[in-house]
Amino acid sequence: MKALRDAFGDEILALGRENPNVYVVDCDIGKSCKTLEFARQLPQQHLNVGIAEQNAAGVSAGLATCGKIPFVSTYAAFGSMRMCEQIRQEICYPRLNVKIACSHGGLTPANDGASHQAIEDYGIMRTLPNMTILVPCDYYSCRSLIRAACQWDGPVYLRFTRDPVPFIYRESDQFEIGRARTVREGGDVAIIAAGAVMSLALQACDLLHSQGIEARLLDMHTVKPLDTAAVTAAIQEIGRVVTVEDHNIINGIGSAVCEVAAGLGRGVVKRMGVQDQFGESGPYFDLLEKNGVTAQSIADTARSLVTGEN
Amino acid sequence: MLTEERRAFLTQRARQARALTLEAIYRVGRGHIGGTMSIAELLIALYDDVMRVDPSNPSWPERDRLVVSKGHAAPIVYAVLAMKGYFDPKLLDTLNANGTTLPSHCDMRKVPGIDMTAGSLGQGLSAAVGMALANQMDHRDSYVYAIVGDGESQEGQVWEAVMLAAQRKLEHLIVFVDDNGCQVDGFTGDILNMRPFDQKYRAFGWHAIYVEDGHSFDQILDAIHQAKQTPDRPHAIILNTVKAKHVPGAENTYQSHCFSLTREQLDNSLRNL
Image (cartoon, rainbow over all chains, first blue to last red):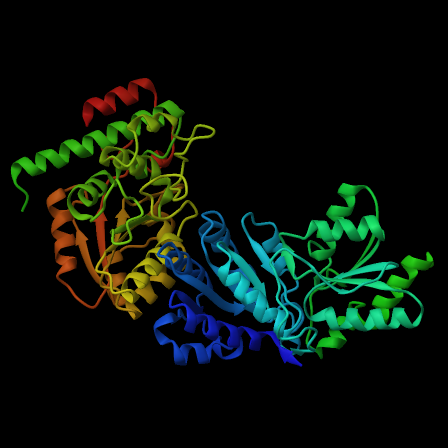
């Protein structure tokens, strides 16, 4: 188990050492976004703008026009909403090379409650032209995708978790922006998931397997640009899809998958995630359960699609 | 002190910038006249006398940069860029036209010489601070200039950027406040008074200069010279300007922010320049 914010702290330090143009722009939460070691070792590449996220976005845009690769580091709630218009106007519209690196995505800042939880973040970011969105699910894929984001020329929104999540991959696994990863192969039902709920989706696959149902599990780590080929294949080859995410079911991965299905005119999609309600304080998995997201419920939903029972 | 000849030359250049701008806006039918006319002298002073730029190489890394945060002033910025040779002045005929490379608000991806996209108010100074920080980190001696409107200074983000610039001692950052006293719905003093700007900037740790006549080349250039002699702090030059300067009947009116010129008004203005 390791938190994705730790993956950010480790990978950004490695990137900063390799490339002096890599910058971290903090908004005074470096301690919890895990950038303090970067600040200590690479002070010339680090800037804390104070509690001023809008300015952080704009300053990063200015840095990017001068060839820097700034990573703005904050919480997902603030990185997607407090600085939303700055991202749209100063980063996405001029297509500047700024990375918005956000910890505390989804319900993971569990004890902090609704104000700090970001259940809308990548849904909002998804509607901005020129934006790329990455939602890694474990420590190793997170490090690989941060590296890919650094090499990607253009705006990227990255979403990390606060709390430790299980390892899904090995250190040597490499991830490509825009290409979903098949975690499990199967032909009875497809589960498309991203982020911290991946371990629940994997457990659901095991439950289904014990019932004789083989699920194809796709890690949709890139929410945008969506791997439409992988989604299309799941719909064409299987036709029954469950999406699972720690995000509002409105405008998240479920919505993106439905858009593809609607275009194809076929397939059944069940969306699992936050049920269009704000979060609250509590243990992370309890909050997910309140929204109907458990390994068992994912398996049940998938099985009902296969058997046709409700 | 400028020579008589130089002052006359710059004055003629400002006249030409205003004429090109008014003609382009007249062709479109409607546009931001007030806030373009108020910064004509400033832009000419910067591009003809101050800024280290190379119009044949707009992305030269060592250049001085200008962020026009009040992005609706784009038509006159484009006019000055065309006069400097960044692109063919004939392009000005296409201002705002569908498919144009000269859109209504400053656009760095479409217009050679524009250093930052703008349009949503209150955001440009942050980008200018980012540029000045990059220059500082890379030990470049280039200057970053920004033009901020008095009305847009009501946006909180402006002051976030102001605080950071002072904290990081960005001595190669010079901000001009186009203090024309007007915003869209009324006089700035009646809506949300921002004056005195110079005292505000000083309180935030900046070196601030108030320029009595923001249309005087001598006063503008003298203030820039003073700024460059003052180390360790960013600089705010407050320009007391006239909205819609040299447009008869529109001067110092907030209604001049964006309006349609009649043929008669255009001709009167061109005669009046």
